Length: 341
Image (cartoon, rainbow, N blue to C red):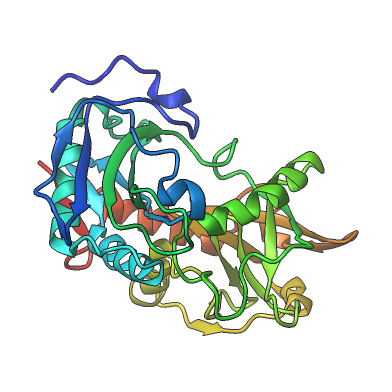
């Protein structure tokens, strides 16, 4: 199929209306058969559950064109499983894993012309989401729901791609103990909007959040998990029950151990220790890895020595290996790559 006439190399991380999206409706206790539609508009009651009580969860994954010309997705089964957990936590009916994966395949295949060409640096971002659509005035779950997937071609999440960024320690909390930090719910991101606008106004690319109970331990940023590299070149991964279980982070941990032979330690990471590490990265679907040059902690600068001009050497190896697996240049572990065509 002929590609769309787009300047793929200069795409930002923004929404473009593509040709098809997938929709399934939940009513009378069951999801309907679902299917592809062309209309990108949603019609709902002004009293819809999602509008009144933020009853919505979502996922994010990507489709790529590989070196040999195939279109693939990366580990959609894990996105399906994570969305099942998110939906259950917000009392949203679970959209079955097998149907989730099939819907992803359908919508990517239907929008094949929007998949950026191999080597362009762009990808097709896939956004599955589910929300309460029936009227709800009392505080309770909705009775009816809609599951949808749209896709959009995107460039790098951060301007400048893998250029090291400067972030700040937020004065706000991202999630409460025993709250919803471990699921991908829209309400978590709504809570972060004021904090990210404030950070941008102050000249920072992102916030890093501390644990809400003691405010001494690194958790994650508004849109990504955090990882560190120690002086011996090994990976240190913050661990907390209120951190979202990033699929990219879990994949990087596997790559570090099984492809690069690094030692990986997943544990609580304290703010007062991170200054000893030469590299820090933010990891997630959108950016894969973004190197952090500095953290500003209320005027005190924490500098990551090896991330000043470019991504540090260990993070670069991790990035190159994982993106090589995603793009088909490096053999993938079994089950990681889902062929669309």
